[in-house]
Length: 157
Image (cartoon, rainbow, N blue to C red; front, side, top):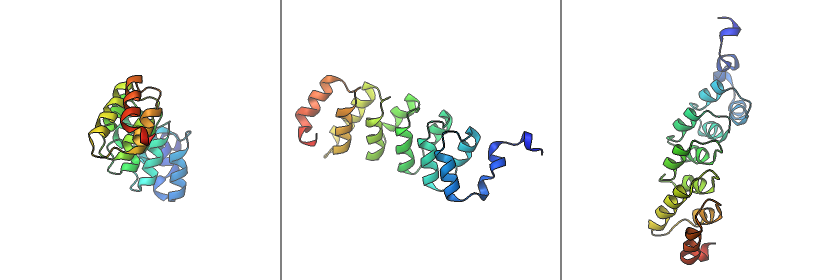
């Protein structure tokens, strides 16, 4: 097979790269999509985490990473500025508080999503202080929700 017909992932030969090299590739916004697709399947979660945070990662890869077994990876998907809104909405109901925290911090989160995160936190015996703060500081949270947070959780702000 000539070099012209090979994918970037084949040319770069990811299988023979060090973890440090793969980490740098996963983080680089200029890394080609096919390389990011391969790195998203890496067994090392820190590599997948960098792919999840990379704003150049394609939507379909972010969708897959949003289902990753590692919460660090899902959290970085929630933080990605180019996350599809339906994926962000799914992550708003994630069982892990760090994932919900990043949803609450994401400037793309709609008021509906933020209220959903708030309702979930309120239903817990002890809401997560960082999530409450992130919700309160998100410009998309409706004013009335801010007033409710001030009233119920003012000591956390």
